[in-house]
Length: 148
Ligand code: IDP
Ligand code: MG
Image (cartoon, rainbow, N blue to C red; front, side, top):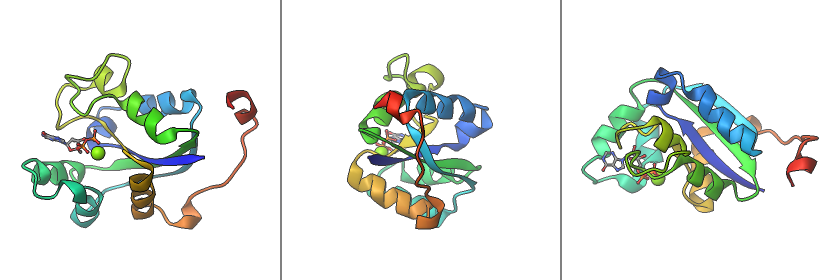
């Protein structure tokens, strides 16, 4: 089963949208296997967004993601990476379809509420940045036999 790292970003936590976002992903059938609240420091932010270093928005992005606590979650499920990207919607909420998290709740690209890994390779790297092996749970859910 695939795993993906989701961050409920500072704007979503501040706006009281954490429950709504987690609920959407849970109701889809994805399983939470790790979760924590943390205030990201600059070092973690720069490592998490290393691929964007040098871009015009990099400093704003690091300042934003470290401005207030986030909730980090590992979701597990078949095609979890792609399903979560679809449910998040386009990076720019103005272009994101209604029915997606960003399309329903966001307006500005700098305040797009949620992060989700964009590939299996990056998911693995990002999960390792936020969680130790002991913080990720292996458990069975009875309802998985009704999802798969
Ligand atoms: P993603 O979050 O949809 O994967 P990325 O291109 O990986 O989008 O960009 C990472 C984050 O950087 C975005 O979620 C957004 O918060 C921010 N970002 C991306 N492009 C811009 C921009 O042009 N202006 C301001 N912020 C941006
Ligand atoms: Mg990305």
